[in-house]
Length: 512
Image 1 (tube, rainbow, N blue to C red):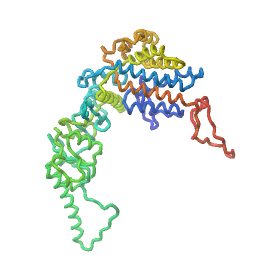
Image 2 (image 1 turned 45 degrees about the vertical axis):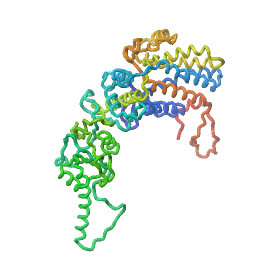
Image 3 (image 1 turned 120 degrees about the horizontal axis):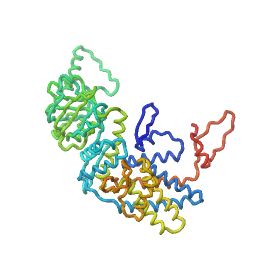
Image 4 (image 1 turned 90 degrees about the vertical axis):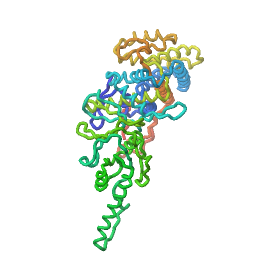
């Protein structure tokens, strides 16, 4: 289900991404704050499973409550939980199957099952296709058969309201929100352009701080102006030696330089973001140069097939497209409203993270709650062989894993108790590891047939984060407030207070 959030500035966010929701919450309770931190960690590490982590950690703490009431020591519970975690990860290793990264069908199934529970799940393969195209484009071989995919640096998501969601596409290159410096004089469409990227201003250098020049003769003024002009002309000559079609600089570009470049038929773009410049360099094979006099032929980017400035809506966008083997790309998202686009972007980020995880570690586990049920069933069997007092918390941890399929069943709108009983029956002996719930229909089916899969990395990370966080919170026996409370005027210095557990829960907000 989706949640609608009102943020501090009055905007609205519509999402069901666990991290996006928890990020907006304003929480005073210290234990709740550390839970929110979990989903952020999960989002940064693997990009998906942010909600699962919170559900699992919450359930682990919930089942531990009964033992705390019976005066079990928290350390005993934590020991049992850690043992359960080790066994759970070994079960994951057992049921995981490797996948061929080059097989697009299985990749599609995986990414689709990641976004199946999200808003964009209703648009079929669209977002999954975009995610796979983008991540395979920017993947870089790092030797030993490993591939590194840097989503944050080299994939830019450009959201433009208007049009339909079906118009979204992954460009074979990059686009950015800029027009050429002199639209009337410079070309707006160039095929196979030679591109030079600069990181220096093409204008006269001013003094570091206030510089005073005293001129005695009138001619000196014209000499000074001539020097400035010659300096700029010299810069332009050095650039034009390499016969570029497009010059892009991150800094300023003076009118005079613009004149020289347009006279030579070169298009120029100024004040581009550094991150965009890096992407262009990766896409067309150019090298960003800091000084024009250090330019070499190898620094010129010739990999792009087309440079074009197009008007979308009210604004101009420059496209550097049809690149040969681009190592950076832009995902162009179109849609009806800003809120829709923001949600699609969040889903796309998750989908790209999943695709990246699979490229990094090509192992799959069943989705739809099947993994958790298998882990739960096998841990229940193993709990019989656990000796001593740890047996009961170990078994409780096994039951806690069922929170995920139970939540899935609730979201499908089916009879939760019947569905869960049927699933537990099928998983009771640890076989049928692939039987789970189809999130759309609520049927109990074989996950392999429906292609509902999860990334091994996401699941392993979720289990580890949730159980370790639960153990950390269980080990806390007191909350000591280090915040000074406001005193009534005339009252003497108050003693530092130690709050019991009950007080910390009742106190919604500790005053500043």
